[in-house]
Image (cartoon, rainbow, N blue to C red; front, side, top):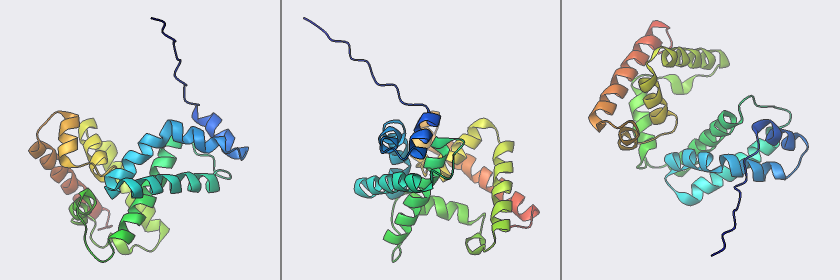
Length: 196
């Protein structure tokens, strides 16, 4: 039997992909999808829990990247795309669930965080938003690595407690307890800073 060795295409490095955007080459979207399509879809799917809506959010992310690069030149393309996908997906989720509080992980995660950041939804100034972000980042930097990763999985990627428990090979009750303690630390820190 004759076997043909097929070499897998190695994804482009981020700077080369960004250069394609600056050159206004449509290959930028193709290369972005090849390297970060699954990553962006995972973020969207965790928020929207709907295949078609998630695909639309990822496509909207590519369009947003096309419109913003240039003039922006992201330092970390994965973070840039992930943040856009998350924001686009959350906006789509809010529109879809405007009249009702839908199921899934998003309302649960938002309800959990609400106890720490009550009143934060009405922040009007960039200054307070920046101060809030700095406080949360400071908290995350102070946490042990596992607690930080669990927090990010839950409140950034909107993973379920069950998924996180499997990923970290521990019980759901341990993850829930860890998240509860971290939210308590966050609440105290925000109160100390006068933000919440």
